[in-house]
Length: 120
Length: 180
Image 1 (cartoon, each protein chain N blue to C red):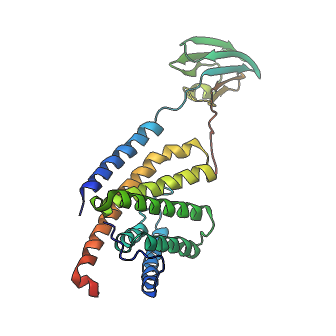
Image 2 (tube, chains in turn green, blue):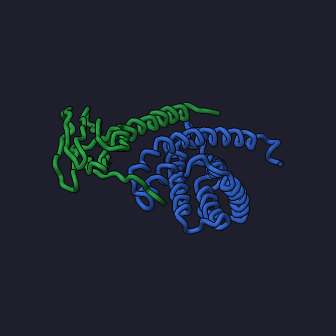
Image 3 (cartoon, rainbow over the protein chains, first blue to last red):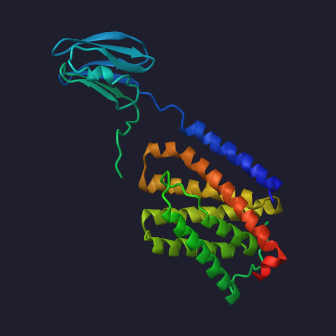
């Protein structure tokens, strides 16, 4: 019922389908630069290649940001809600974290912008 | 193994009846499947392709093309997807699957059975659909993330369909079944 050619095809097919996992599920393109704006003014463009910690002065105080392995996040901010800190690490193009009370927005720039939502 | 009983381009009344019968069977399966909810858009067993495969192996490519074309056309009219994106995907899938059957049958000859043919045609079916879906309807990278899962499903269902076809063909080949 199952012939040699079938086995051959099955092996090829499993290998081929397996290869698509490797090819298409590889990590996405990481962003290259984080742009930090305070009160709509760009104050810093930060390459994500080098790990640093920095302090940005905003409307109500100093926010601290950290760059680590191509990612960036807020690590401290004087705002009450701390939503910026809870936004966590940003690494993909188009991702944004904002501390609105302090007027600080961090956005990742990169080659290809990704959608944050799609509705069909 | 593809052993076309008829290869002349003119279809006789006998062939017409066979095409109609097989197409009706395929359409029934097609509609039954459409009624089942799918865990993932684009994933369904594709059991109607079992009919195409059996027709291809027993009666040759030309009859299989007829049966598949009838199934896609009438099936879409009955389900209500005629000329909709679903229909376009159906046409692409069926055309891809038939092309794959023809090429694999030609190259593999008697070394390839229903399972191999079914797997190749299921994968081509799915690839063709994803290609059209990506280029015509959803040109979004996220669709490509879905490809491995869709292909895995195609591989599994293709194998199952092939096994079903192999069993049906075995039963059809019995002399007793010929009278049924």
